[in-house]
Length: 271
Image (tube, rainbow, N blue to C red):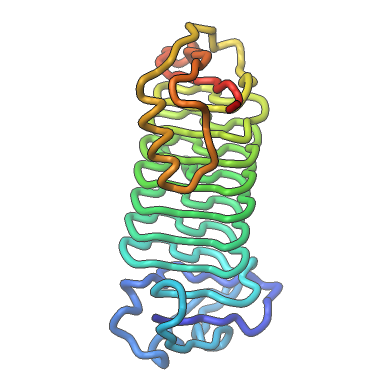
């Protein structure tokens, strides 16, 4: 287990793409310190910025400490292992992950879990824009895995999402689930305007009445059997109560502009 402690926060972004548990598994601390990272437009050894030590008491195979809010690409591309971050992370954390677990004990920047393929990400604070989203010009966002947000998130959460699960306990911004192809979003703190705009398929569960565009229409009010299964799964993730088992939801279908095969389920508040 390696503990990477950032000595001082740099005003110039640090990019640690490719620094994953499987990459460092067979290396010594000195070899890890010699791995290249991007500092602005230059390549520098990791050890120029981080103290690298081994400690069996650390959380995860890679444990980041210090003020890492300007460190980008933490756990990006990871396929196995465990990465733990004590403080905030920069952009692209967990992007294109295929497996493993990333735990951020504070907040995250934009593009968290972008185009994620598998694994689990948990952020215990707020997250920025484009969580689990597709990069500009790409046709697919998140295609697998789970993202659990304990706080709020910005705009375009789940943009072009294909598969997987995103749970946000706090409120999220505009265009959540936009152009969603499949997958599931649980927005337990509600969402702002233009929710599910351009949605093709998939399921969005949201607290309260959703702010939907004219391409959605009310379908029915019913008690979906699958909701009780989802509630039990979310309880295993230590998510606060979603809704009483067996409660009714209001179902909206849309977006009619793109075929109208998606569903938005509005939960009654737990009582």
